[in-house]
Image (cartoon, rainbow, N blue to C red; front, side, top):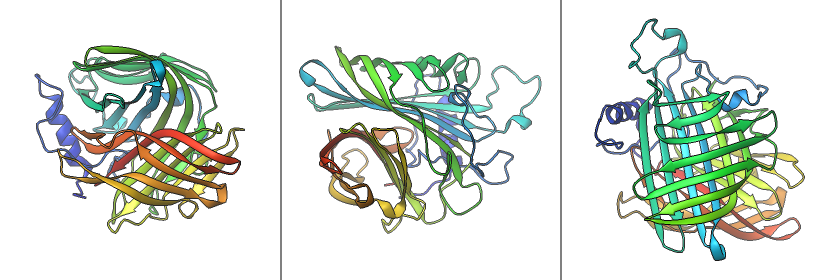
Length: 378
């Protein structure tokens, strides 16, 4: 992987946000995304201790931390079971901590840069389309709040209502080729990851994020692709993290899995990857049973083996898009395959993220799954 500091990505976003014509930056894409990091000693807070999440407040922003994201993904079915996958994600990057904000600053002055990605996978049509929005956090162009509940970048948004243990949110995004109008309602409680929400990404103090998910959201609405609109239902996932963190030296990327299991459970696991392809000791995840029981997964609890690769004709990057996942202590073995091999987002940030399905065995017998896979740093 071509390692770049996050400052390069910020310059990318600043360049894109200053472009009055289009949303996409005319620069070579960076390869970092999910664990967007910052420098130590820069005045931002760092995740150093477990915390108690408070909802709906924690659905909103945490400006004391440099980076934050709202990650919606899901698998949907139309008439006769026609499959679609979707991704709608929102990212916040702070240029300066709140204490350094200037009084009486111009309304045009931005203290934050926002980025949103929207992608649709049409398996039957063999189509994958990805789009991007970039905006300053000024003049109402982008932002987030918990009361009312809303996250938006320009005309793309997630808005709704929330309580301490439930969430109802509408996703709305539209471009020249694709559109999404989807109502999501949580069917399970929030799940905190790591040590009571403190998810360590490395050995250094503060090299961690605060991380929770709502792994099962019932989805109902419509998708549009190239002029065709389909009524769909399905199951979605929300991932939420905020931090002031960076990948440790020697870590070049990550492989992230979020799977809805056919037995009613959910599995999230990420592998922090070294240049030699090995998982670091800070890889991890969470298995949630159908009864709601949460099991923390350490790096040694899950074995990941690539099965198939795909080379992007656009970037030339070779991605491992099919995997064998084995979690012996949980009694789970899954063969994971993409609905489409071609699910690379070649935007201001380049990465592969797409809809996947799986077959295998669980502790009670045959097990299937649907979900999303993210491959970054290749």
